[in-house]
Amino acid sequence: MVKETWHYTWTEYIAALLKKADMEYNSAIFFIFLFVFLCVYFLLRSPRIKKRWILAGNLVFYLWSGWAAAGIVAVTAAATYWAAGRMEKVYRGFEEEKQELSPREQAVRLQAYKRKAKKYLLAALIFILGIWIFVKIGRLAGLMPVETLAEVIQRKGILVPLGISYYSLSAIGYILDVYWRKTKAEHNFLDLFTVMTYFPHIVQGPISKYETLLKQLKNLPAFQYERVCRGLQLMLWGYMKKMIVADRLVLYTSAVFDDPGNFAGVEVLLAVLLCVLQLYADFSGCMDLVRGISQAMGIELAENFRQPLFARDAQEFWARWHITLGAWSKEYIYLPIAMNPKFVRHMSRMKKSGKRWLSSFLKALAPLMAVWLFTGLWHGTGIDYLVWGLYWCVLMTGAKEAKPLFARLLRVLKIHTDRKAYRTFQALRTYLLFAIGRTFTVAGGLAGCGLLWRQMFAESRLWTLFDGSLYTYGLDQKDFYVAAAGVILMLFVDFLHERGVAIRDRIGSQKLLIRWAFYYGALFSLLILGIYGPGFDAASFVYGAF
Image 1 (tube, rainbow, N blue to C red):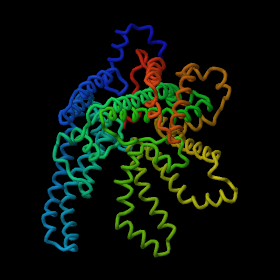
Image 2: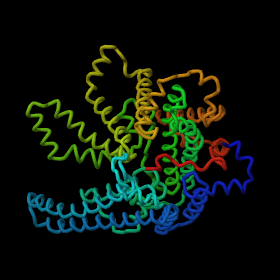
Image 3: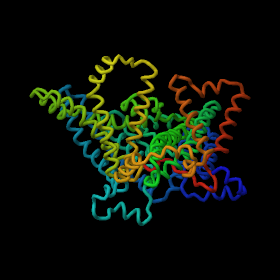
Image 4: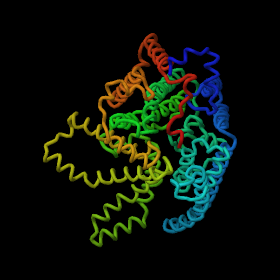
């Protein structure tokens, strides 16, 4: 930990930091890369040159993970560019022809042109999803008895493309938008490739819409001191959440989840509760970091978290957590199924045949199940992730169907839903539901999940909370206090945001001395309290694994 780092000289310390091959966002090599990149970027005046400098930065960042991985991204970008261009060419023929057609004839001809465009759409989807399945899924929890090609690749040391789950979804969304004629195809391949490989968001998102980023990329603003300061503030806050809170809590939670059989019930329960805070600090910290980098450059990335721990039910939680994945799933999975004419007609016939309740239930369940099965597979490829997806599907469907019953129950019990106590109860209930969901995946499979729950109720040994043994599993007492203080600060900031307080605006409006006192205080807190140094490698961000 931090106290161990002072036994090293600065040269030994820097050498230890640089030994990590991967360019993690919290690694020394990334700090050096980002410093050089931003310094040159701020000196450039021409938006066109800035755009190409971003592409150069993307290539350096991505090539650091391996030439093979970069080659797969380049081929994916080429396939995306080709399919979008071919579909636009097909629709251009329709635009030329429709001038001489009546509205009815236009509708008929449009369907014919869409059938032509669909060939290119399907070719691109099969190619992109094929690569994703090939390198990401491999064996599905041991159901396939033979070694897959993906496992051969892994055994031979070829890297899985960095951020494949993120850029694949963005590419699929882009070509679907072109097919649905929601957006036009990009004619400049380098611009499209720049967006696909944009280094701040390729590792963990957010999942951006190509047209939004392309528009910003073509209108890069000049250097502005206030904007750069705001971006650096957000970066610093993200690093604090990651390195002070998440990287501390994971030392305890990973120790428990790696071998739950050797821990008391109360220790396992504590790890389950803390793993939610650890994941939130890790993932939201990364989002703050990458959004801060982009803000400093004059690019706004989509918000991915909106105080999710204050959510009052499961549906609201997922509207606040990993927002861009939810938005993507709704636009490209949920709505296409729910609004599919064949599906709607089938549900209508079922309703007319007297199966009103079943029709209503399936109408809500089928699209939602598709979304959650996809979300489970997107997060991981084992049966445990499928169960995790089904868990959330059942929760959200059940909550929707039982909503009238709960409303009547609240009226009978005369519970005032607008009271703070009830809202607090709802937030705690949602937190526990998320923690329960985490148990399916944190212990390495369903067998580990079962062991986790058995151990939780086998022998509580409450005295371990007070006899000091809790501080022997990765975190000592002081580190627990630091983590607790970090969690309180993180939740307090979220509370202020929930109340509509613009914290960075408040800090920015202070006098110079007070403003920089905040900055230096945060920076020195990170340097002193952050988990880093020769005793620790730069810990990977959790969602970077996807």
